[in-house]
Amino acid sequence: MQAIRENPSNPRRRGMTLIETVTALACLAILVPLIVAATGSTVRPNRERMCAYRLGQLGSAMLLYTIENEGYIPGSPGTSGAALDLIYNGQPTDLDDIPIAITQTWDWAAPLAGYLNVELSPSRAERVERFRFGEFWCPSNNYTSVPYNYSTLSPFQPWRATRMLSYNSCRNFLLYADDAPPPVTIDALWSVNIAGTTELAPAYYPRLDQLGTTEDKVFLADGSRYTSESGDVYHDVNWRSSSGGMYSDGGPTLQETYLRSYILDLPQKAYSYRHKHGDDYGINAIHYDGHVSWMSETTSRHPRWWYPTGTTIPFSEMNAPTRTPLIDEILQDPNFEYHVP
Image: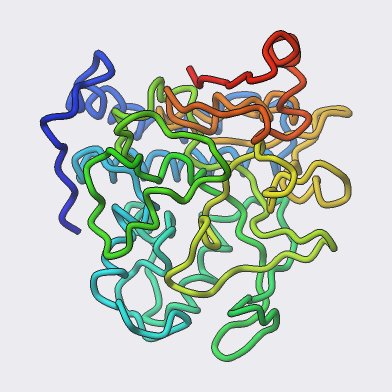
């Protein structure tokens, strides 16, 4: 894919240049999985450690991808997913005969497969299923997901029920602000696909040096996209999908109406928060600087992890656990908006 070049009229918002950022992170791309495997070995359950190790590998692959693609982040319809819009525009959206590796415009897994030496099938349906096993699988995830297509929820050829995708990217990092350099896609939908009245940082676009402090921003985390109110999990098989498709979610802070992963109540909550420490439910997450962390549910509900620096979020767009740590500020200002650091 031809990466999108930066608009020189947009001022830099951060101190480090792109070259400095990716060079510093390149070293971590080699070391992170080894560090993850070595740390906490006596206290973390084996399945949680293996999950963290695999996230470390995926994070290393992501950093290598950004180095080779001018810092652009995989998994956005305007970056790695653009080829589908450009090549298959007008084709049926449930088309299986798509030989290029990308399976959906929000697909973060296919761009990383080559860095993990993962061979992929010519069948898009088989590739989608491959991303639920091996290097892409959290061992604590044994939930089943059912294909979804145009309001129909059931297996149909060549799509079948399979394991739930273990890891979700956060789509808030994959969008374009209205005044950002235009994405290489046919449809402008990707610039406004964010819940409610939340506003992305001015001129934001999905490149590593636009995120803010990369150690605070989450690339992938344990997730359960899409989980219904009844507890069913399904995956949208259309190659051109909205709202993150089968790969991406808005994160644990969204207003209750929008949550399709990171559900507030049991038993569905445990689909995502599947690594407990004592009585605390938690998730593993890989950050954009390449480090892996365990987050308790309380910690994960804070919006700083899930939005670019400079994003403005009104309190009405947050769920109750997310608003709780901010309650003093909300009570002082009925028009309170959270500005992501």
